[in-house]
Amino acid sequence: MTTSTIAESPRKAARVAGFFYLLTFAIVVAVNFGINERLMVAGDPAQTARNILAHERLFRIGIASNLVYEAGLLALLSALYVTLRPAGRTLALLAAFWRLVYASMWVLMSLNQLTALRLLNGADYLRVLGTEQAQTLGRLYPSGFDAYYVGLLFYGLASTACSYLFFKSGYIPRGLAAFGVIVSAWAVACTLAFVISPDFAKHVNLWWFDTGLGLFEL
Image (tube, rainbow, N blue to C red):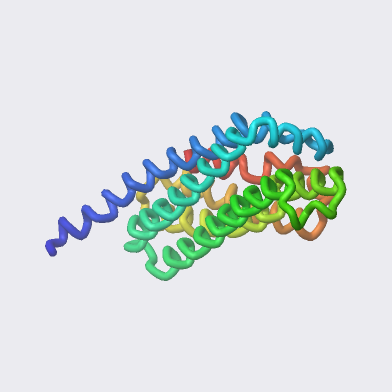
């Protein structure tokens, strides 16, 4: 294998990473704003349960879309590892493992959503529960907040490591890479603060935890 061929590999991987960045971003935005916003009613588990049952096919499309998103995350982490390996093999590998944990949290959320459907459709072993109890349980699973914010911690760590490697390698403008380090570390700090004290969300809106991170990756 020639030196030029070796150098071409990270460039190809970078293009693959760019494609999967856009794909996964489009999916998560479509599901959150096109499906979840339509079905989930904050503070009203009974209405949320009715919405899910009335639009079960739409809810299942959301789950299927999340599965595609999870597959895209795995492709993304692989491409980023190949792209950034020349800048720091160990740190690139660690970032890949952190992204794998994040992807695992999304798999867990998908399983929880399928469990929610089973709860709401009245599986035999749940008939001992009252309607309101089942609806409350059904609302608990699709929310996925705990799993998401656990995953966000690891995603922020991975993005911090990748941003540093981008800064070190000069693959992207160093000013942009430095911005990536800052917003990624911010996401990690906010997530830790939120886990320790949920009241932190009263001072910093949950949307601000990862908005900067999303802008950087775009």
